[in-house]
Each structure stands twice: as C-alpha cells, then as structure tokens.
Length: 312
Length: 218
Image 1 (cartoon, rainbow over the protein chains, first blue to last red):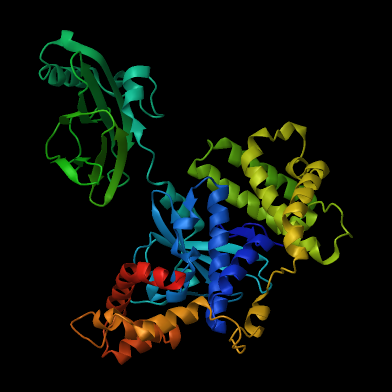
Image 2 (cartoon, chains in turn yellow, orange; image 1 turned 180 degrees about the vertical axis):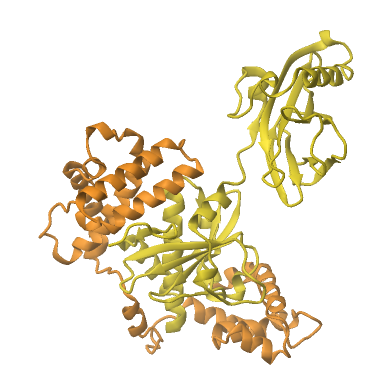
C-alpha cells in the first residue's frame, strides 16, 4: 500500500445511524430511482456533516433543505447549511465513477460543492474534493475539476471572527498579531500618527481610555509589507468611541505602494469609506462607533485583499 | 508499509497536528491527513469482543471508528511522543473496549428491530415502486396529486419568461412525476435556458412551500 495520497481526502464510516436516517427519508418516495437518490443524498450530507462537525465547524442540519421530505421530493438536493456562511452541496459519486452530477436545482444559493464517493456496500464515504463555483449551465463535472479538501477548509476558515475592540480598550487584551505601534513603525511615522490624531481631539484631558495597535500585512501580489493600525479613544462624556484606521509603509520605505485601496465596510459589507494610494506616506480614516457596532477594514490591490472584522 | 514506517508517519502527523493551534486551518488539514492514514490501516486497530456479535459486529465497529476519530481530534494534545507510539496511545484496549460498549448500546436496539445498512445493489434491487394499493399514498404521491389538481389554479398561472407554457405546474410535474431531465424540460419549452427555468422553479417552490406543507398536514 502506498502512502502519500496526492489529494487530501477524508473517509467517514457510514454507521447504522446514518442509514437509519436515509431509510426514513427513502420511505416517502414511490419511484425507485428517486428513492435511491434520496437515500444516497442523505448519506452524502451525513458524511460531510460528520467531517465538519468533527473539526468544530458548526452546521445547521435542520435548516438544510436536504433534511426536508418535501424539498427532497421537489429536487435532487444534498445541501448542508454551515452556520454563518451558507450552504454547501454534498454531491455523491458512485464507486469507480469519475463524474459528479451537479443538478440545476443546486446551481444557486450554494457557497461550494463537495464530492463524496461511496463504496458499493455503502459502509464508507470518502470526501474527495471541493469546488467553490461550478461553470454555468453544466449538470455534470469530472472529478478532475475538483480542488483539494484543503481548499474547502481554507474557504470556510477565511472569514475570521470579529475582533472585539472593547476588550482592547478596557482589558488591554489583544488579538494575536496586533502589536504596539513602536514594533512596526519608524519614529517619524509614530510622530505623524500622533500629530494627525491629536489635531482632531478637542482637548486631551477629556480622553478617558485610549489604545492603539497595529498589524503587519502583506498582499501577495506586491509582496510589500505594510502596517495596518487601529486606534481608539473614548472621551469622558458619552459612550461614543473615536476610531482611527491607518495604513503605513514598512521598513525604510517612505511611501505606500501605488494602487492599494483601503476601505471601511459596514456590517453588510458595503464600502462606506474608500481611498486609493498614489503618492501617499499614509492613509488615514477616522470615524465614530457605538458599542456593539460592526465594521470591517479591507486592504486590497486588484483582486487580492485582506479583511479584518471588528466589533466596537 | 511496515509497522515501523507506519509508526513514524503517524508520529510525524500527530506532531504536525499538535504544532498548530486548536481550530486553526493548519490543525484541521493535518488532522485530515492523520485520520486518513489511520483509516487506511484500520485493520491494525484492536477489535474487542471479536468473534462475538456475528453479523452486527461490523455495524458496531463503524460506530467505534467514528468515536475514535472524534476522540483523537479532541484529545490529541494529550499524546506525548516520549511515552510511546501514536497507535499505542489511541488504540489502547481499554479505550477501544469502552467505545465498543457504548457503540453497542447505541446500535443494537436498532439492529434488533431489523434495521440494516443497505448496499447500492440493495437499492437497485428493492422495488419501491408501489404495487400495493392498500398502502397509504407516499408523500411524493400526495405532492404530485396536489400539483395536478391545482385547486386554486396558482401553479399553472405562475410562469416565467412571459411564456405561459413555462409554468410551475408543468415544470414540477415533468421533474417530479415524469422524472424528465432539465435538458428535456428546456427543449420542450422552446429552449429556455436551464438556469432561467431552475431559478424560477426554486423561487416559486420557496413561495409555495407553506401551501404544500398545509396540504400535507390536512
């Protein structure tokens, strides 16, 4: 037997419990082919759900159409709702087959497709690969088109948890990677940052709490490192928090690379502030936020981007 | 691969899992690899009560393997390379026996009720096409009947692309009752794009779902 599988796969033992569920749904169908389809779809969703559940990726089986006898009747579906992300479609592949069926019913409202192969006895299900998007008007795909499961983990991991700024401000506890400004910025940049901020404050003695942190970021394309800074101040009166988001070049560089976009997005992901670098030593946004408010900071260059999600 | 090579591979993968912080992508990827190797070599895992339970043994053992998989994911940080090989750690007899006894309790009541894992051949053989008219109609039969009757006339009057022929009733019956492919449906409706038809179908289905539920509950 050879070790070194070329692609990352994961095999789930299909237990009697899995078959029990499949048989429950199966009974509601009169047509043999349809009943078989429902049976296999149920096992495929079960396998994906076991894998994701095992890795602590939260799913919502009950909210998935594939678990609903009515929706099973109306379409060839095997969706699995992933909490806070959307539905993945769990497409079964017959033993020895290289073809994955992508029924038109599953073309919309999916964040990706997982190919899952059974053995003849239906005692195990092997998760073979993942595809975030299928080509238009195509109901069948070769397995070769699928990417590794690694990509699925990457894809599901992408959206990181929101960083809670109040723990920064009141408890001085920071998320990994967020360091003090001195570690990343040059003295003249620190000076610049300080001057830009103080000019906006009415009087420094009204500041109750303040904190500033920065993170090293690097967009693959340009390869240049930049420092993303977030600073906050709460004044003595009121709950409102003043927030600064700044971008600086790193190291000996005086200027940011050209064509870098810095954006502030609201909860829905709509850009509410946007700036693009031409000949800039820094970019700075300032705004106010109320406790509980969400916002995102996106740094982008063409189609490559880094997004950080915050809660005030 | 001999036992020594397997031990080395497993140790290396286990350390790789431990190296990544909990719930990180790296840990999930490394664990996926680790489990794959264990599963491929599952014949090396101990099998408590072997020779007993006859036919139900494999049913129970599938559940044991699931338990082992979850156990490894949750406890892998407790594995200490200096205290032995990885398989000795996760495949110790007491642990596997505990999993087996738990699995027994979970599986046997269902098994004794006659539940079995069906194979692909079973699914192709078993003729579920209903011949016995004394059985109550299945859910799918009731749904088809409701669409055909269309008591409010809404299924046939809801259509897409300004084409009354491309109505919900026609599409649903072709798909659910006649089991036509989308290609056939598209061709029958003058070559309307499949994506247009299927997204119309999904949208309308969501809209009508409460009606179907109400009908089925009556």
